[in-house]
Image (cartoon, rainbow over all chains, first blue to last red; front, side, top):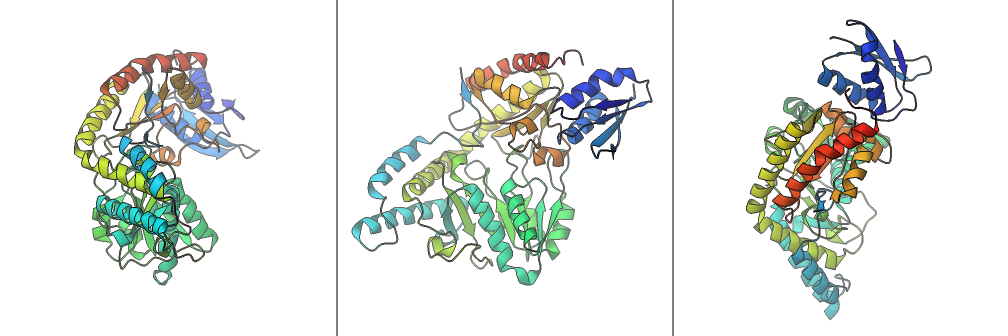
Length: 73
Length: 376
């Protein structure tokens, strides 16, 4: 599952992530495409605080950072 | 009960500073470099301010120069130290959580062909001492702050200096002077009068006798050739008076502040859901604490607190002009959203802190509700 958070400013990307983590099955991933510079540290912190896995960072075809999170519970 | 809780940006003017400023506006307005009566009078006031400041810093009077700000003092400390130590190489070693003034000076050094190495910190902003010492040993110069300006964590400056005795060490003491002991081992040191209740527009640059340092500015004979332009004597006099006063009452203030910050750390963690209280809970400055709240817009939180009369600052990206989150929080791997820094001044009362703590959970809940974050 992919979330398009382009143009969404802190703290909206992690809010979007929190709203949609329940849409994927436990063990599956959700990828947040976000150009806000706070998304990187905040998604990592959200994973730590909520007990999910920060499963890495890549780039969308347009160069936007894409953060993958695995639902653990 | 409104409360000003952003002393780390600028503390309210100390009453002693106000008095000294008014007197020095009468007696210290002339050019201290001139050889007539009014000039000599300004010179006497400036010399006395330098002597008193040096004593509080732990320096000799001729090691101390006054600058226009803490930022200017940091720029001069870094660039002047690097300029004079080219024979040691071109690598500038600094911590990842230095004040932006140090990082911007490093950018100037890199743009001129030099190299900069940033040493990381742990989740509580404590630097990796081993890595720092290893890099600093072979570096041209190194910079480590006495304590972090956003989260209050102190760094083991004296240990680092002892482990790298040959490397010139720039120490940012801008949040430490007047609040805690200034660590030993610096070759250049920077301070900022706003943080101890002096007037804005005065910084302190101290350069150790024998330490290599060349002015990065066009030549000027003011301030021992270190800082160009005639100093603002009345403001310098007021800053020195405030520093002397806060140093004299420091033990009592630090004990009071330390207990209030402990109370803030404990209460915020207990009463605000989904909050991270940041920084070293023990190895820290007595008067600063920072916390971050999940699903909170930092700007909205500051505005909501301001409406209730509470002045605090934030490292959240939405509160910065560049829309970048604080590099300190990023280096710590900390949550950057809903970030609040609370910093106390000598006049901060227990009642003000308690009122802030009483209001905060409701304000955070209100800002979260506006974002539709309830139940997430």
